[in-house]
Image (tube, rainbow over the protein chains, first blue to last red):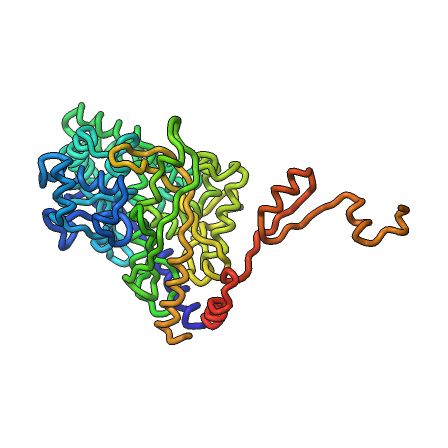
Length: 416
Length: 62
């Protein structure tokens, strides 16, 4: 159908033309319009407290104590269960967050601007590895790290970013892909390139040597630091592709630990949801699939722009890490994802595939027709609140989201 | 039985078997377990075999 083909070309064109740049770090209350006290933004499509999984509830309780809305975790859970806080998806506020995706008023957020279309997106700073709020962690060590990010790291890195003017995220991504990153489960190269770009300026703007050393070490020790920049980059690139009549291109994929949700260009902000699936992968010593929580996070926005599972061929080591088979089979993932994508990104290429561009623009029609669903590289959280990450793997987007979307587009176009 | 008297199927099975498996992947594992060469083709019916959805997709240009 020509209307759909033209609409999809336009959607992919807008995604590819995006120029996402990191321009600032500011407290959420200053940049998220409508965000108030006692309001918690979470990953995935809308969800209520009674349907939230264990790690999501753990993170919510931690976020409430962090903001001072309750004195301890027990009181925080009661406040949440009694309806004392409002829950909304990050996506409804122009933001994204990995795993549980907690965003509250005082958290410092990366501000990313797509300078081509003048839209902005936001994401909290990656907390590092181990026990962290994004995996449901909520003890004092977790809250103290968040306080340090709010009071020290965020403001200091913000000074460096402002001094630099902006940092081009697209070019860092291109370099990362050529250095073994797929930008979901491996961000080592991009995090290192980011540190190289920002370190000299950070040294100039931070007066206290000890603080400077702490800030540099924090980025250097966190292989996933760049994930929280790749995510708002993804949303900044896909948001301009929303609302193109007839387009069947996916503009967002996310999960909240209970439901998986997608948005499609031609149907604007409507969510199509289905029960989220369990990741299949490898577990850290002492843990197994019995401990695992169903998949969660807004991070599947990176697959939406052709990274993560779609760019597995760029990161053969990740195939082994997430239990997806031999590194030599990594290219099969990318080839398979090409079957459901409208185009390729000529600026993000994969050397191991003769510099083919990453598959870009997931077409819900192709997903349903081929039976090939998007594959997402993901971390695995423990199902109980407060434990944290127990493994990494690959999860399939549920077909139900895509069949619903196809029917909705057909209805929109008067096709039956 | 001499080769001349064998049916085409008997002849096929008395020589080295090479298999092209289309669709269900489970057969591949069993054949490999018997040391038989097998190439798997990942295939499933359009729209998961749902005729109504396949018709709708056709109208939408797929």
